[in-house]
Length: 271
Image (tube, helix red, strand yellow):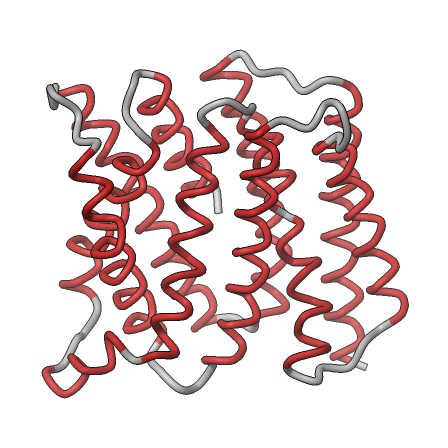
């Protein structure tokens, strides 16, 4: 979980140094695909499945989330972007009730709404709403829909095939814009940042897939919120971004409500 904010931090440095979000997102997906390919166990019979319509929907959501998040990081503190991004699990919970007919829990709904209040404290809607914050909200919406898509696809395709398809389709979709915004000079420093951005994200997602294979989802899920801690620490160390009191309180509310929500869900399953 900590590798993912590290990858986003490298992407943020790239955009601050003049690289376009389209190029950063495209290069991340492309390098991620090339890295994952040897470990994917892809068989010739599965080639057609890479472009299955259900996987195309997931790829579109994933690509939208990545592009909007990198665009948001260009102007917003990384901790704030990750805090806003966690509107995703809230959307996923209620969307799953409507689309997947999952049962609703009043206590968990309350905890998620408290988390949503924390998100609003970070977003600060109204006169303080920035373009970056709005892009982070869109990224969170895409992420929430992606979580529902993951449940929708569960058991239909191999996890590594899903990840490979997402990275391939996303890199192909962003290729025109990515090549159009190609930096004039690819220095050693730029290439290093590109590799850190792509590989940290790819390795992080690969480890998460492996963790989900070894452990049940309820055990892995609360660790998602550790990204808030990692993002906050990286924001201070790399960018001297110290959240204001309102944002810091909002981040704390999101973290606590999120962990309590998953603890409740776990205990309910055990009962």
